[in-house]
Image 1 (cartoon, rainbow, N blue to C red):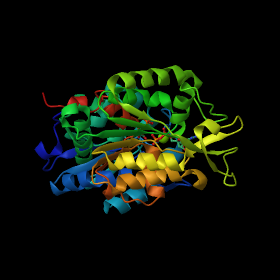
Image 2 (image 1 turned 90 degrees about the horizontal axis):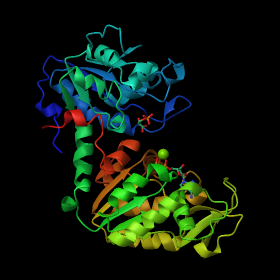
Image 3 (image 1 turned 135 degrees about the vertical axis):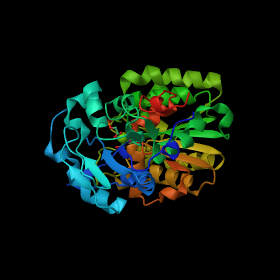
Image 4 (image 1 turned 180 degrees about the horizontal axis):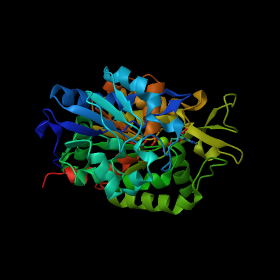
Length: 389
Ligand code: ADP
Ligand code: 3PG
Ligand code: MG
């Protein structure tokens, strides 16, 4: 997949509308994970170095087309300025405004207008009217066909930023069996099976192994006829899980499920966690992490793989009793010399919680849903207009 990037654009003295994904997690008004802001800095630096004026726009949360003060980007402006190491002019709307002649400006949350999600052509034109060139760098929002991600490309010459380029270059080879260094192991965890079915299906004929953990594993264990007690399961997805297990046996992909599990009878800081074989799970128990023997076998498999892709934690890592599975697997990936790719909001949150440096991985994706849809093999609407014919 070849896309047009800012390296090919004539940027000098141009006004650039830069779509970033500044949809960062916050707690009590403070940014808790700055990954997405740091990730856009190389593009901002590149644009400035090439004498462009940068006008940043982004969504923030889901305000449903209304102005909501708590979802104003002004709250994260100090963090943005600190990371970009520049003063940034904040403008309190994204359309019908005058953009000042400053090196960097930040427009207010695009989702304060319902026309953003509707991909309204007039709204996209108004956004585009601020600039001479559009640069798309919001990989995390590239699966959304919104005015600020896709609509504007109909009105301006459009290029990918350096982050979008690096996301595509790191992950596109995974879509082409010939380019994958084998063995390929896919690790899928987390909670919602319906958001992860596509990626599972797409990798059944590519991956040598698929490790399933997290609450997702519970649905598969149930599909295999195991008792999972009070564990989080998606009963309406049991049939889907059975289909995936059946397809895997046809394609020769090995699906690995936990053989022992960490269980407790409640989710709390005080809960007592015990490690038991999957056969011993009782009615009042909840499976909240993978067990020690399972961790060991998964680590061994990771050590023997040449490409490893992980999306979703292996347990309820927010609680110390149930964090070991996610920690051990992430550490094994960090220690590996193979190609390692990690994505998913909670997976990256876990990485940061465990203080594992991002540079120990080949690629950390800033996409959650976007990473999954990309690896499903779907053409993302905000990337499609940038593809060279
Ligand atoms: P990601 O954001 O990395 O794609 P998901 O959003 O799919 O991951 O899922 C993350 C959530 O799944 C976390 O809150 C985690 O605690 C939860 N989780 C993982 N394993 C279990 C489990 N066994 N039971 C309940 N919740 C779990
Ligand atoms: C994300 O956080 O995954 C992206 O910023 C997209 O956000 P959305 O799911 O609200 O469109
Ligand atoms: Mg998540």
